[in-house]
Amino acid sequence: MTRTRPLTRYLGAALALVLALLWVFPVYWMINSSFQSAVTISSLTPTFLPFGGSWTNFKAVLSADDFVAALGMSLVVTGVALVISLIVAFLGALAISRFRFRGRKALVLAIILVQMLPAEAMFIAQYKMISGLGLLNTIAGVSIIYVAMVVPFTMWMLRGFVAGVPADLEEAGMMDGLSRFGAFMRITFPLLAPGLVASGVFAFLQVWNEFALASILLTSDSSQTLPLWLRNFAQPSSLGMIEWGQVMAGSTLVAIPVIVFFVIVQGRMTQGLVGGAVKG
Image 1 (spheres, rainbow, N blue to C red):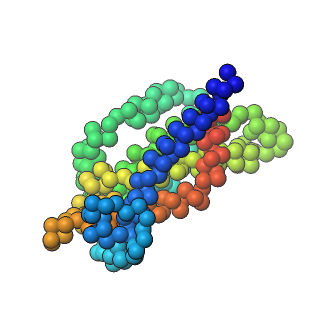
Image 2: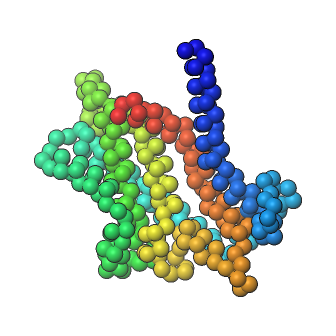
Image 3: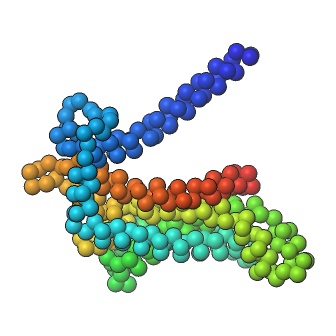
């Protein structure tokens, strides 16, 4: 028994290391290829270290048409959708966790059913709705659909965090002279902040990387998010070749805001995930 346990631990650690390497290797290969020329990438001998690489691919991407415009549109759409969806989802999670009202169970069931629906089944209806409002190729139109897409999952996730904070804490604060709003802001909200950050990270990733809906609602070349811009940027050149080095450089630049956002909030996100696992 004593010999089996160390062996099991070593096997488990080795398996975790292999899985981690398999997960990280595509990211490394993307960054590595972004520094290589098209000749090096298309050669039969792969280059695992970017020796002799250059910034030529990144310069080509940064000087490409509409890259800055697509970056700005992605930042604005993601920011607007993230803020609105967190506010709406947070208020909805408070309502279904703290209050008892008629239709509460039906609302919870509707949230679950909405998450089960395939997104492709609603594309036509969403397009008709945004087209009827005259909001195609606009930030407002895309943001409305993104908020509707993100709110159900975010609300369901926040519901677990809100339910994990006892209402007795607020009642104790009210007994000490605080109002209901003051007790919530001073006692409950700080405990829910890690959950908001964790939910915000998932919402940010979902909106930032969204491609299918954007390709339907943004049909103009002048109105594109970064995933759409990268799709068009990866088209073959006049010589019939795809500059994979430039495509990888563009993919790396698209991933940088996600990495920066995650680094900023990773401490709070870890607290939120652990808290949700314990309390949920």
